[in-house]
Length: 260
Image 1 (cartoon, rainbow, N blue to C red):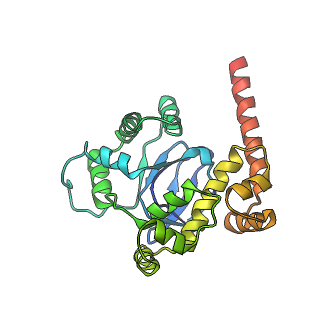
Image 2: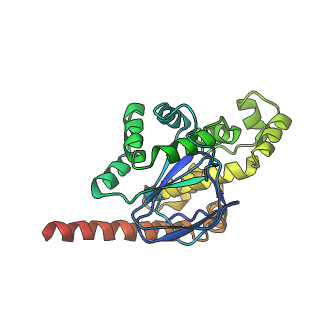
Image 3: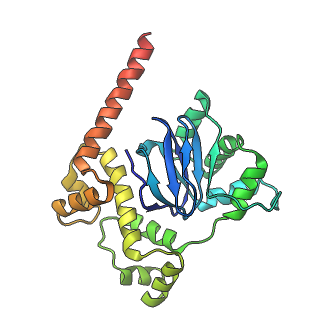
C-alpha cells in the first residue's frame, strides 16, 4: 500500500480508489472524500499533505507530459469559462470494462495506444471541466521532472547536485535557483524518486531487501530500511509481506469466483 503524505507529484497522476472510501487533503485545498471504485486525476506539481487511507501501487498511473499534450489537442482551443480549475478532478464511477481498460495503462504500450485509452477514460468527464483543468494546469517543462527522470535512468548512482548540474549542462547555482522556483530541493527529488521506485522494486521482488537497497544506491541495507521506514512509516519487509498477502487474497478470490 502506498501512503501519499507530504508527496509532490511531478507528473499528472491517475489514481483508482479500489479498497474503500478515502479522504485526501491537497495543499491549499479543502479536504475531499473519494468514493470507492472512482478514479481521480491529480494535476502536475500538486502536493498531498494528508491522506486517510493507503493506496496500492497497482492503482496508480503517472502520465507523461507528451501524452497529456496529445490529449489536449482533442479539446477546445480556449477555456469554455474562466473559473479557476481545482488541482484534482474525479471521474464518475467506473464499470467493470473500464476498470480493465484502466489497468492496461500499467502495461508497456505505444503512445497511440496510451493516448487512446486516456481519451476513452477521460471521456466520462464533462468537456468543460476537462478543458478548464488542462488549460489551467497545462504541462510545463519542470526541471524537477527532468532530474527525476535522470535519476531513474541510473538509480544505483549516488547522485550529487553537481553531477546533476553537469548532466543538465547548467551550473549548480542556476539549478538550485530553478528548483527554488518550483518549491523543491535536489535532496527531496532524489529521495522521492528513489522511494517511489523502492515500492516498485519491492513489489516485483522476492523480498531481497539487501539487493533492492543496492539497486537504489544505498551501501547499507540498514540505512535504506531506516530511510524507507521514516518515509512510509512501514519497513520494506512489512510492505513486501503486505503486498504478498494482498496478491494471495486476490488470487483466492478469483479462484472462488471461477468455481462459482
